[in-house]
Length: 82
View 1 (cartoon, one colour):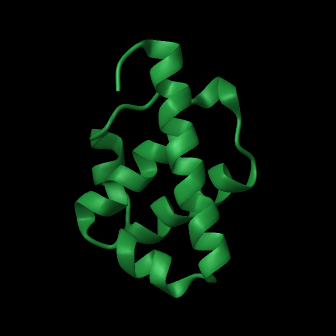
View 2 (spheres, rainbow, N blue to C red):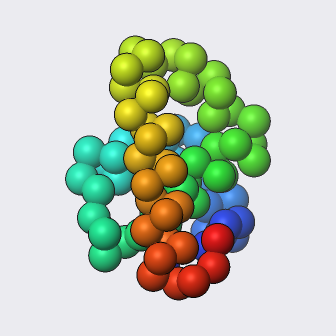
View 3 (cartoon, rainbow, N blue to C red):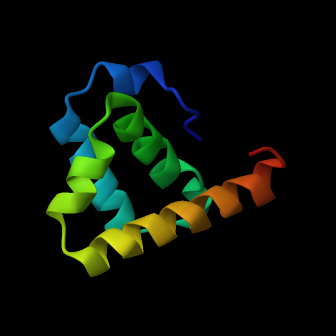
């Protein structure tokens, strides 16, 4: 499981992280709890997350935020840490 901040993510361009986030959102998997939230945390750290969400359809943006919350809950349940 990835943990934030992940040094491997730091070297990637924003577009690559956005693509990885899109793939993770399209195919969520409980075996990879934390993946969505780590990618979102990296985009937030870079200061681009809000701009990305603003560019999306409001329903899609809300779905991504909900999945972020669910993903954090799954990670917490599996690892016992937030």
